[in-house]
Length: 65
Image 1: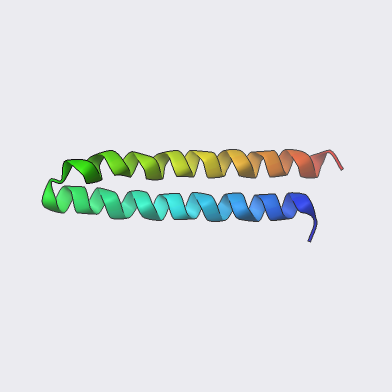
Image 2: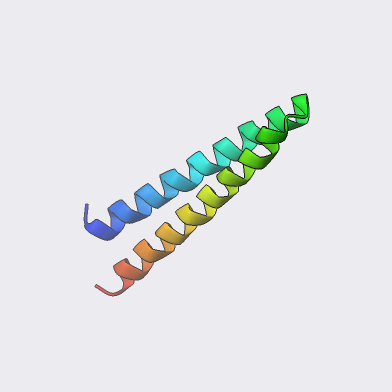
């Protein structure tokens, strides 16, 4: 497995973890009305965006070889 494939895999894992985190915090905020959970769900959204950016970087690196 070469370096771009590792980057794509780690970016995908990061995006999946971010989506899971967003889902859990969103459900908790809806259930309890907790304001901290309402704010923390945006951490999950940002993690998804960072993961997608890392995947795109890996795809760009793969295309240059």
